[in-house]
Amino acid sequence: MQVTKILLGTLIIALSSYAFAGIKDKKAIKGSEAKITTAAASVKTACGNSKLDTKVDWTQWDKYDYKKMSRKKHEILRFTGGLTESVLSSMADLCKDADYKAEVAKITSLKISGKVDQTKPYVAFNLNGNTLDITLNADGVSSWKNADLLKAVWE
Image (cartoon, rainbow, N blue to C red; front, side, top):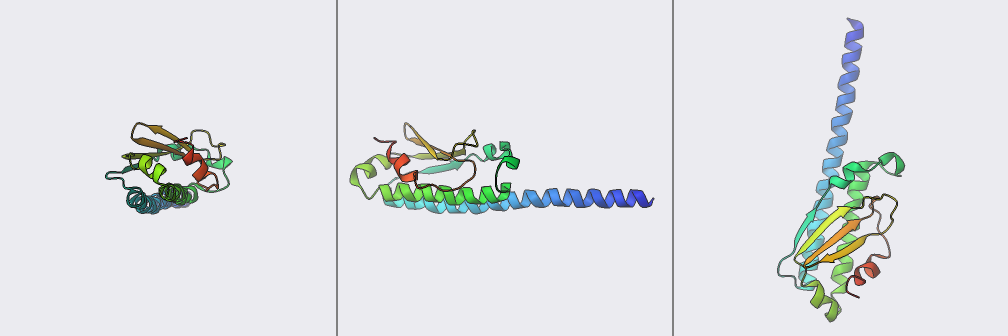
């Protein structure tokens, strides 16, 4: 009987820890999405986009091997909001130039996802019609190259 109680107690603690980790991930995603929404609104204002839908596909972050990464999943999910905010801030800054502004204003959709390859350190951009695909580096850490990589989309 005592062994059963110990095992049951251990199981409850294990399940509670698992549920808590899930909550940390959910809270990190919500925080990141709030940052992304605000940053996308800044792009819309700065660049004159009449319509700008922003969608984040979080499924790639479920596929990463976090044992190979320097941070826990919820930390990386939180950093992803800051990284995306930095990218979108670079986009808004790009619109200070009238030529780039005219091109960025044509974008109606931002599709954000994580890179499949965890070792690729920089954000990647691909313009597909009026959709800009933004593929973030797995660790969510910002880079000084975001502005230059973004400019290259139109050069």
